[in-house]
Image (cartoon, rainbow, N blue to C red):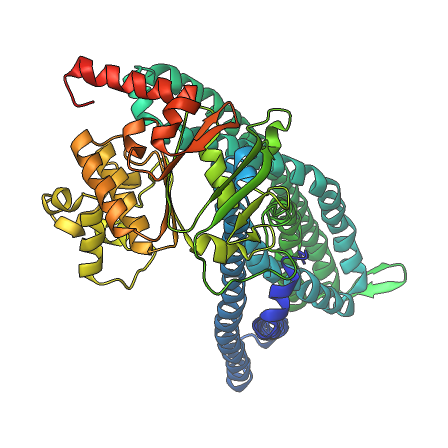
Length: 599
């Protein structure tokens, strides 16, 4: 049986299915033992009776065989339903548990682990575990119960012939023990190569537009061929071991069957001739029916032996897959609630940073933010500007606590976010990230993501706020238009504004727009900023921007330079105290003059 801390609880949960399945399987195995005996009796009766057949005797045997068939039919239905049902429930439960784990893991985990590898764990590895907990259980019971019962029957029938059979059959067990570890290593290597193939394909499909734009189809095809070849070689190496293993088992079984037929025929002929063979003082009196019965027992023993050999291979694969799943489920959760999290009744929108310094876990020596301190009052409209790489986005991801910060450095309504319930914190912040991710669903469902039960009027109002209502109504299906994967059917500006509409519909006390109007024209930007000023009056709104026009209506603007706070004041005062802001204003005015636009 495959055991593990994330698997054992499912055995306990579905114990009744396993119990019913194993009992049904044992019942089927038990009644099967009488089948060779009845067949042997019929052969002996036919060989002895000549033309005077006992029809009643044959009828009783046939009724017994019919009863065996009925028990086998219903028993097999029962164990297949229960055991396979339990294994599929285990797979579903573990997949659900893994998905929940994936949601709890921090951003840092996904920086160091590729999505393709994770998808492989969710698919091939879980399927391997499901196969073992279902069909593997069948093989375990048959190998142990049916195998033992058949050997006992054979020993009672004739212990000398049984020893002649069991001695070479023990080679199967020995061979399986030697091969199990090697097969597990080959399976692990196969899965690792498959992960790399999955990663490569996923990355190329995601960046297909870039590949086409730079005419790199041929070079990427060659690169894919190299990765695929390594995956092919790993698969072939595993299959080679499996084929050699199965072939040797078949050879051993065939040799034993030939041994039984050869010696059995000799023993039977000698018994019929009146000169039975004696071995170790044991006289072998084998009738034709007895030979048929013994061959029938051996034929029943073949499946447990094959199952035992297959079980070795399957156990190695399942153990390797379970280890990979366990490693994922054991991955440390960096961002999690404290033991007694603070859950405020209502967030007003006050934000304060006190001496915050931060570097990403993967590059601890490279400080992204250093000694940043400022305070935002509830209801303020705040702009954040700075050059690329100055730490603007990082500042807001820390507010959402996508990464851990040093205690006593970030506060919301005077509460340290490291002490606050993570779900409550994020529930009160509407965040529009730079990548403007849209799901492959309708426009309406994308906008209503924070509130799936929102009525149509609320969705339309959110689209009006984001200045995208007219665009949506111009689509072929209006708000029921499917956006395509990651919003591929929409323009950059439309994706940005639909993301803004989604955040607005959340109606959170704090809204963060991370460079969310960079792809819209100036007139649309101005109308959107007017809507923010009007409709979010009294609520805290933070706009991260790469151009000063996007934050021109802000109450105060925070200027970052190389991870440090250069200034935080009104737009008018910043012209005198912030060289970075003054230069950004000058460059934008110069750009507008060149384009003939407004200053």
